[in-house]
Each structure stands twice: as structure tokens, then as C-alpha cells.
Image 1 (spheres, helix red, strand yellow):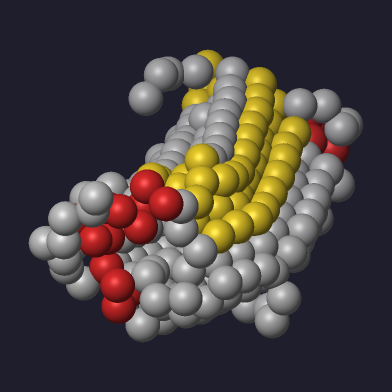
Image 2 (cartoon, rainbow, N blue to C red):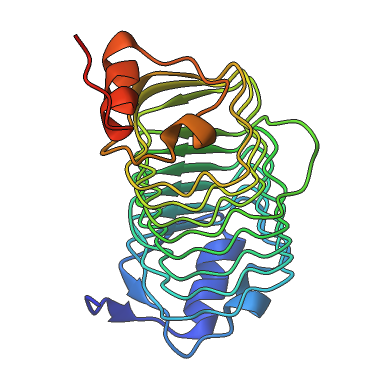
Length: 244
């Protein structure tokens, strides 16, 4: 991790109280829970600290611009309207967090835990989300967006993506067991080696997806999905049929 300038708690508190951004700072050793609690729209730029404990903190309007907070603990935190651009939250835990209207852009979110989180109108764009856990999300309707992000090896068990459009997602080796993708449309997505056991695909348009090398199990796992002629030919070849 790049070393920024060390700031004391009083310096950080004074900047935040004045509505000024905290920039280029190494925040190691500071009690960020106390410093950020109840601060209106705090802005941190190019700051760094490993595994900060921010569980349960109200971070409404927070901006993290180019910050590196690997392993951050944000369980049950409120990030309503937060903007996270660049930087890293790799390995962070946001279990039961409220991410309503939050935006994540080009951020390293590898191995992030979002179990039980509320993703109302939340947007993830061009993020690295390898190994992320999105199981057990709150809410009955899908109102969040995942565009251009890498969700390889992600835990997407029972995720509800019915009738949504997914664009530019790499889902290689992701776990989609029990997911609901009925009537979904996948555009420029990769589904190589995805676990589709018990996944509901009726009406799902997979013509814009890379299905990778298909196995003889493909007719069962892809049952009900809409595929292209070329993909249908791949299914036949996986069954050992010769397509004339």
C-alpha cells in the first residue's frame, strides 16, 4: 500500500467539520468510526488504511475517490448515496449494509461480502468483483445495475435477475445455483464454466453470451433458454451429434 502523509485525529476532524476533503492521507491508527459518524457528505481522496472498522456507521453521502480500504468492515453501515470511485475495498464485508443509490465505479471489490445488503438503485460499473458474495440480498425487486464488471468465481446463489438486462459481465466459474434468470437478457456476457444447477432460465436470452465449452449436461441446464443457431449447434456437438 502506498504511504500517504500521516494525519492526526484532530486534523482529520477539523477538515471534515469544515466540509473539506481529506486527501492523500494514511489513516492508520485513527478511529474512523468516531471521526465519520454524523459527518455530512464526507469526502476522502487517495486515502489508505487496512481493515478499518466502520460497522454500523451512517456514511450517507460518503465519497471515496481513489481510496484503498482493503478488508473494511462495513456491516450494517448506511452508504445511502455514496460514491466509490477507483481504489480498493477488496475483501470488505458489507453484510446487511444499506447501499441505496450508492455508485461504485472501476473499484476493486474482489471477495467483497454483500450478503443481506440492500441494493436499491445501486450501480456497479466496470468493477472487479472476483469472488464476491451476493447471496441473500434484501428486497424483492431488482433495482440495482451491474455493468461491465468481472464477477468470476462469485457466489450468486439464488440471486434474482428475472427480466433484467445484464451487460458486459464476466461470470466465469460463478455459482448461479438456484438463481432466477427467467426472461433476462445477457449482452456481451461470459458464462464459461458457470454452475447452473437448478437455475431458472425459461425465456432467458443467452444469444449475446459466451457459453464456453458445453458439456453433455447442457440440454438440461439450459432448458427453456433462448440460444442462437451456433449455440444450438454447440449443444448438439456436446451430445455427440453431427450437425449437417
